[in-house]
Image (cartoon, rainbow, N blue to C red; front, side, top):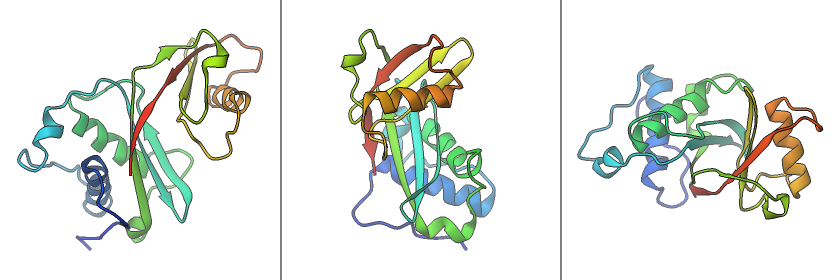
Length: 182
């Protein structure tokens, strides 16, 4: 079933095209995408300065979202491919994506800015900033502009929950912005 076309309204950013193709190749052919240098020269040369998240939606509902808060691969292209495959196959909240779902997936790629420590909670804005919580080995991440998160308090409570932190437990918080590609 090669050549499945992802839902598309307007031209997609190259990062989204790569993520979508990486998912298709992995789900259909059980192999990692090996893009050619000619078609992705700019992305192959770009070193990631921060993390990347790849999120999948199907029918308007989240279907997978995996990412990194710091680069784990030598190039932005490799970071996107790795996280796209992980979002489709290793998000513990969902079963792996099946071939029959590929045509219905909407893929987004978020490239994170470098995280900065939060010294004043009034500097948070859940629409603009993502949030990380760290306490020892516990770690939680929330991307910005998440449906249902309307206040800083909502964002703090959910990032603490994701990190497995009690409300009164000490944690360091870091904010970041994203460039979202659809």
